[in-house]
Amino acid sequence: MLIYFKDYLLNLFFIFSPLVLYPYIYKTKKKPLLYRFLIYTLFACALIVTMSFPTHLDGLLFDFRSIPLTLGSLYGGIPVSIILYITLMLYRLITGNPNNLIYIVSLAPSFVILLYYIKRYPTFKLRQKVLSAVLLCTLIKLITFATYLALTNHLELLWIEPITKIETYLLQALIAGLCVYLIEFLNTYFYMQEEVVNSEKIKIVSDMAASVAHEIRNPLTTVRGFIQLLGSAELDQEKKQFYQKLCLEELDRAQVIITDYLALAKPDPEVIERINVNDEVRYLSNVLLTYANYYNIQIDGIVSEDESLYIVGDKYKFRQAFINIGKNAIEAMFNGGLLAFSVKSQESHVTITVKDSGVGMTEEQVRRLGTPYYSTKEKGTGLGTMVSFGIIKKMNGKIELKSELGKGTEYKIVFPRV
Figure 1 (tube, rainbow, N blue to C red):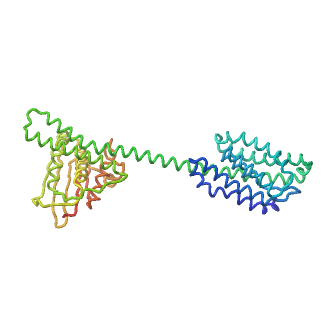
Figure 2: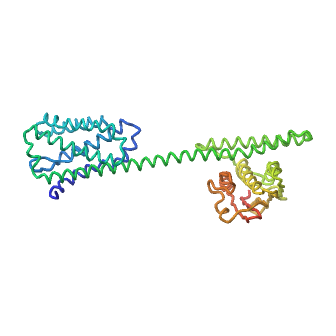
Figure 3: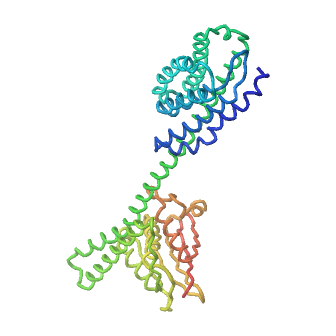
């Protein structure tokens, strides 16, 4: 067998060559015509090359044409199988081989067998596919040889040196089985890749939905609280107008949030403006007031004496970030407490401090805070804090976070001063 093995090396190279290009062909599966054309082209080339470099084995011309013929038919389907058989017969005719009509008759049974297997092949498991390919390659070669030699009155050639012929058939079976295993391995790998991509898409959609719900819930909660206050009969007209104004501002903020999420694919430029920090701290204290009252929490807003404290950024996103932080701080104080906002000015920076007297956090929780989908709350998503930290950093802010279990948490957020 080793004497003939060197003659088969070129055949082996061209038989395995379609596997190199198979990853690119797999991507065309959604376009059946293109996929079948590429499968046919690759296996037809392998078929022609194997026929061009046969091995003379005891008066017979032996090659591995049955391997590309079988694999191309099984993975390309009936149309590819028909064209491969036509290619085989035409190339044999072109190369001047004798008894072409007899060869066609000899080849016909193998074509019928292949047709039987092609429809069932996709439903087989890996072991069945490997065994089917091995069996089909062997049967195609054996039936075609035996029929051809019987019709040409040379059947005795089939029994000369049977050991050598058996070894050759075993080598052919090994190659066919290995090819099927590699193709199926690639199919499984690419299928798993597609499943991972699809699951990631689904995860992104679900996370986006959770994030939108989280962000919209904040202004809606505030509006709900003010609407309840507006229903009070003892409320004077001035406070009603003030609460109405806050409700409208919070609804506008909800609209901006929705617009931001809808525009993620093609984000619009942000509205960059000068933000008066003292005015914003007063606004935040008022907005969070009703929510804080629900938890029996006092809000203390300490502004700077310097009324010309300005930073640059998007005012609505600034509010979104600090309302998220303030709301989380309120929810961390189960038994009441104090939420304090304070503003301090420096030469080139403005520091906004948000401090609560809540349950606090461990060092590990502090370290992970702001990462996607991590929350210290039982039903939290972590998206609000992540978005808030992202907004602050985008406005060139720096976040310093200190927390101690049982004593509370302190945010120090430093912005460049205009």
